[in-house]
Image 1 (cartoon, rainbow, N blue to C red):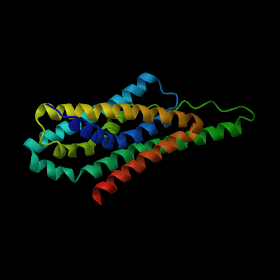
Image 2 (image 1 turned 90 degrees about the horizontal axis):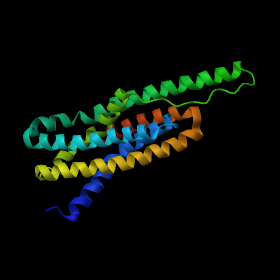
Image 3 (image 1 turned 180 degrees about the horizontal axis):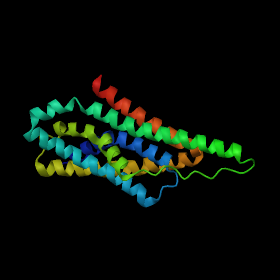
Image 4 (image 1 turned 30 degrees about the horizontal axis):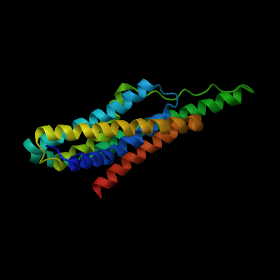
Length: 207
């Protein structure tokens, strides 16, 4: 029988683990202020899926591959830094390029107003990379829930996923609202946010 403390503990754990995904969700909303509701659910759902999978993989590793898992842990911050740095850098370059093109169009078009920006659509591949990058540190949760039974670990991971889903939907909404005001500069800000998250994850885990 699962206690109230079990649910409270894992809800709080979910909140903590979802913070990186929340920040990336804001960045995605910034980059695509006209994002459709279905796409917002796809993005948030992807982050929630990975936040469910990673703790379960960590739990399995702790029980069956403990020594190898401990050796792999030291690479987690490096992986997060490289993945988020790559995505953020790509967004940054695209944002600067689009801003430059809009300025050139404005200067060459006289009184013609530049076409409104539609935002940068996130590819499926990039979304998968974001999901892995923001959830890879959740592998370490395997140690936190190591004493759980299989069913309890599954339920804990589901709770973490649900919390992540809600928080990420909220993050996308914030990003979209800010993105509409920031217009063409939004992608640049989004890229900077992702790079900053990668550095934060790296520094926190290393030092």
